[in-house]
Length: 195
Image 1 (spheres, rainbow, N blue to C red):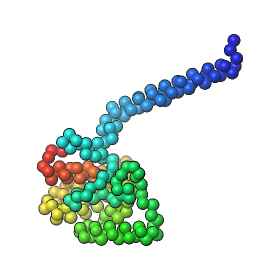
Image 2: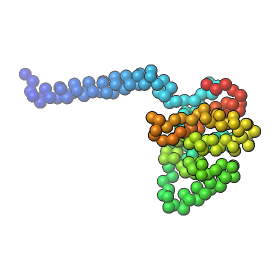
Image 3: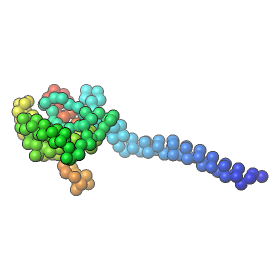
Image 4: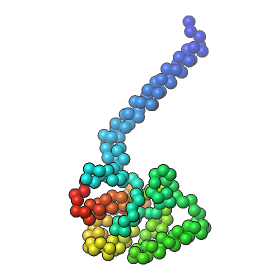
C-alpha cells in the first residue's frame, strides 16, 4: 500500500508530464496550424516579395535613403528591430526641439507641409511603425511628382489604393502602410509586375 505522500507525488508528476505534453506541444502546434490555415500570410510574417525575393514585411518600416520614395516616420533606432524604441526625449527637451525643427526645415525644403505631416516630425514608440496618415501620404505626392515627373493624379490614385480604414471602422484614422506603398511605387517605376 502506497503512502499518501507517494500518491501525491505520483499525481504531481503525472500532471507535470501531461501539462508539458499539452501546453508545450499539442496546444502550440494546434494554434500554429489553425493560424497558418486561417491566416497563411500573417502567420508567415506578412512578407513582401519582389521577383521571388523577400524584400520586407508589411509590419515594419525599413530604412530607405532614396528621395523618390514615400517617407516613414523617423526612427530613433534607425529602423532596427534590435533594439527598437523611441528616443525617450521629454517634451521639454531642447534636443527634441532641435530635432523637430531640423525635420520641419527638411520637409519644407521638399515642399511638404509639416502641419499636415506632423507624424514625420516625431518618432513612433517602437521606431518601426510603417503607417502614416492618408493626408500625409497625399501631401508627399506633390514632392514625388516634381522629382520624378510622374503625374500627380496618378500618385494620388496610388496612395488612395493603399488607404487602410480605421480599426473596426471607428478607432483611429485612415492610414497608409508606407512599406506596401513604397514597394508598389518601386515596381511601377521599374515597370515590373507586383505580386
